[in-house]
Structures are given as structure tokens and as C-alpha cells.
Image (tube, rainbow, N blue to C red; front, side, top):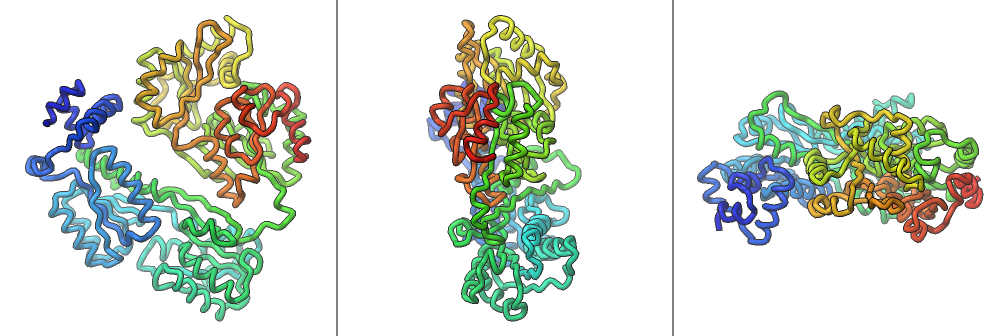
Length: 618
């Protein structure tokens, strides 16, 4: 079987098959067709012939400092997911933090004609700097910020700073630090300086921070270091550790010394180990998105391979983090346990679809609930720009926007996951081929065509029967002159959601066939119309309203049992399914009513205020 045979079976050119096999640029439609034929036939290219022809093989070398680490496992999983999609194999080397072995792998992988190398960085030495400079293939480094090298790394400094600020906010003032070797800039220097800067911000002397460096990131070293700090600083009331594993050792030493964690002393780590969720009390920590670091590193390397002509400055990317509060800084007191996190859909729930003014009675109920210690969040399909005016009311602590793609809490962005550009372009093309009209929702703008406006207007004029809340929102917003930008103004801004309206359900068939594994097609048939129109939205399977709620719970150290979710339509199912108590408005869909715990009065009948009172929130 040859490339030509595959091309004939797929109905494409041999060049298209070659680009698919080599991870080159290709439309999603052709990629899906070729993938189906390749998987059906079990075809694999001849790597020996490929090496003779190009001097390279479809292999990417990955050099890791320790394959037993949870973060390394997450990183390599992210790398592998991207490489698999482009038909590259992953070749793994394990250095066990041996600098000479690391240099050996760099040389060996080049001799074996790998196409590129991803180095999970640790120590930056003159020898490594020279080896990277002399490397004959593209290199991307993760976890460290090495000069003059493409890098994807975490914001270790800011993460450690915010973690320490959390401890200070709970009244901890005699804080100590268990750190790591300062040969490692990220974990050794950046994390320690972040702790010191937080102390300075609070008016304390960061330079006098009591600290000790562990010899390895192990439980045994954490226990040893904690015992030494207890001797040196017997009145300490807070401990920040360089990693979770070190913190588990510190936890053991503190318990042996009779200290109550979360009461007598606060304790926090960095890394979000799974063990932190099962120890008692749960360990407060920083969650780095290591799998996403791997994904971004692989994408960066593949871009360098596909577009070697693009020179310019070396690209270096910093990824975010979140603080997961599980109680080890401060255990909740009994009177805190009844405080709830309340998540409110907007259109059809908080206010009539398309409106922007919260009714006075509803606003009074929200203010009263906040005064009673509950935290209120918007949970909506609207983008950030369309949500922001409501957030100006002082009662809201944050929002789940774009159906979970963009999440805010206490002024901090917890989640920011737009669609991949190729993904968005591909599904749009599959819809538009069948006359399906779309609006594109970026974070701060909405783009739509004139036909979409005409369609909503036509629907409203033809039949005065009530629409579902999403359709009513768009129809009313367009009637009110909502500032939707024309599609011609769209210049590739990251998209979080696509709203569609189709003449017939069958018009969605191709898009579903190609993209059902990537998007949830949340449809609402306008069945009160004889024409059978279908409107709805595409929700990225990487997130939904439920994952947004979980992100806020993790950030605040709460459980899903502490949450209440209010909705009215089928696109609220992911929210109400995870909420501790789920509430559907009386004007909501029959599907949602069947799935929810409670039915509240209609949005038109002061439903939020009445249900808040019934639940004892006010």
C-alpha cells in the first residue's frame, strides 16, 4: 500500500496525504477523510525511506528530568495528544536530574534524526546553553525561562506570591518557607521570591523570611526540614512549601508536634497532587495546567517545523494557574458551613430574555443573600462583554461566561479557553456549506451577518408565540440595536462560542459528523413554527458551565454540595447537573424541569426573590 493508494481511496491528492502524514497544513475536512482511510487500512509510512528522503523522521524527542513525577506525566500527556494528531511519534529520555545524561540525550536524539526536541527544563548550565545553541533541530523548553530559546513556562513567582497572600489574609504572620535548590530558577528562585514579595506587600520583612532548602522534593525531606524549622521558629503559624510532596512531609512533622493544621498553623504546597484531596485536612495548593503546557510546547515546536522560514524573536509563553483552597490554611468554622455559592443563568432566569436591567425586587434579594454570607455568580452563555454590565452590580463575586470558556472570581481569571483557530474555521465552514447562519462570539465582541438579523426578525413577525430564551435574547437584542459587528470585521479573534440558526435539522448533519467529538450541539427546535427552524449553540467539549462551577469551587475551597444552580433552558443542563441543589424556572424547558430538584416561579413572577426566600437564603 502506497500514498497514492491512500489518496485514491480518500478522493484527494497524494500531496494532501503526504501533508497529513507529515503533520502539515490541511483542512479539517480533508484531515478527517484521510484519517478514516488510514485507520481503516492500518497504513504506516516507511520511516527508513522518509529518513533517506528528508534527513528527518516523524519523531519528536522529549527529555524529562524524572518520569516518576506527576507533573512530568501531565506534560507528556499534553505533548503526546498534539503529536498524535499530527502523526508524530514521541521518543522519551529520562535524565533523573543528571546533567551529563541530559546532554547525552540531546546529542543522541539529533544523531537519530528526530525532527525536533522538547526539553522539560531543570538546571541551566553553561554546557546546556552551548548544547542548545549548537542544536541542529528546533528545540522548545518547558517549565523554565531559558534565554534565546523557545519556552513555555508557569508563572511560579506570581503563584507563590498569591498563595502566601492567601495565608496572610487569614491572619498568618509568622510564616516560614521550605524551598528547593536555587540552581533551578523556577522552583528555587522564583517561588522563594514570590513568598518574600507577598510578605513585603503586607508590610513584613521578606528578607528575614525563615527558610530552609530541601535536598530533594520528597516526603522525607519535607519532614526533616519542618522539624528543623519548628526548632528554629517554635511560634510559627504558617508554612509555605515548594511542592506538595514536600508539604506532605511537613504535614506529618506538624501533626507529630501536636500542631492542628488549619487552626494552629496554616500549610500550603504547590503542584496540586491528587494526594492533596484525600489527606485530612485537604492541602491548599497551586494548580499549574501542566497538560496545557505540554500542548502549547508541542504546538510551538510543530509551528517551527512547519514554518521554518518564520524568523524573528524567540517565542516565550507564560501560562496561568489557580489557587485551590482545601482548608489547610484555615479550616471552615461551623457557622461557615451554611454559606452557599449561587450560580444564576441570565436570560430567562435572572431577568427576561434580552433585558439588561435586573428587576428591583430581584436586586434586593441578591443584595440580601450577599449580606447573609452567600456568594453570587452569573453563569451564562453570554460572552464577557455582554455580561460585564451586570457584574457592575456589587452583589456578584464573578461569572461563568461563554458557557464555561471564560471564568472570573473575585477579580481573577480562572479559566480562559477559546476554540482552536482551525477548529473554529472548520466547523464554521461545515455549517455555512449548508446555509446555516452563525454569529461568532469572542470575549469582547460579537460578529454576525445581516441574514442572521433578518432571520430573527422574520421569525418574530411570522409567529408571535414565545421562543426559547436564547432565541428570544437574540431576537430582542437585534430589535434593540445591539452592537453586533458585521462578519466582515472579524479578524481572527479567539472565539468562545458559535450561535447558529438552520432551516432544517438535516443542515447540521455534516458538522455533527465531523465535529461531534469536539462540540456539544445544544439545539432548540423552534417547534412552534411550521418551518421547523433549529437554533442553538456550539459548546466546546473542553468546558461547559459545570466545569466553570468546579473551577470556582476549587478556587474558593468549596465543594459542589455547597452550590445552588438556577437555569431555564437546555444549555443550563451542565450547570444544574453538577449543582448541589438544582432549580429550574417555571418558564423553563420541560427537559430541564425533569432533571432539576426544584421548580421556581417564573422569571416574570419574581421567581428568583421568591425561591431565595423558599430556600432560606434571605
